[in-house]
Image (cartoon, rainbow, N blue to C red; front, top):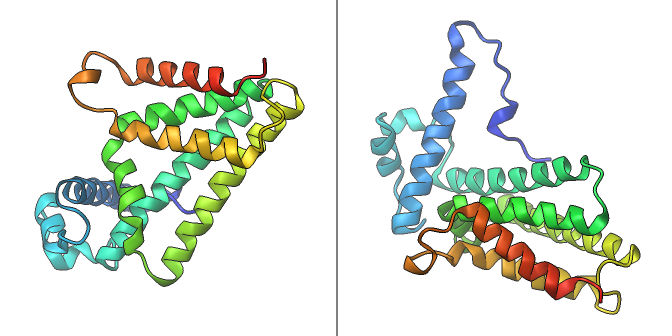
Length: 210
């Protein structure tokens, strides 16, 4: 399971660990804003430092490199998705309802964190070596989790049983990923919850057994 800022122990004197965690979050938020506006390639560490209000050299106390910043954004995104799956699994829902509740929470996240979602899907190619391999591993784990939910719902008879779970998984993931593009005047006045509910209604209609 990837690390996250929330795992930092808050026992250091003078609140130093709390301050470090908050500064980590500040730096990541600043990097997300700059990457969303300019793209990863055009972003500089100096711009991130300026946005946070620290010297460039001070930034390296929190992140080792520009690539490390990108990796942390992607890492946190995956960790949040895994946490949602764990929370929903603990609700004791029927398989189809578990899938729909997980997808609803993911949909709300995509709609409320569109910049972060765009970075996850468009900038991850800039990672190299072990970081790139780790990102690919998280992607495989995500797909495996989704296929498992679908397979359990098929076994329960609530999802069409003749369709390969791999195909259904790709269909659902593709639809979910497209939510990050649901912006502009056409969707003004619609809350993230409203749009997520519409997405779930459409998904349920597409996959539910007759």
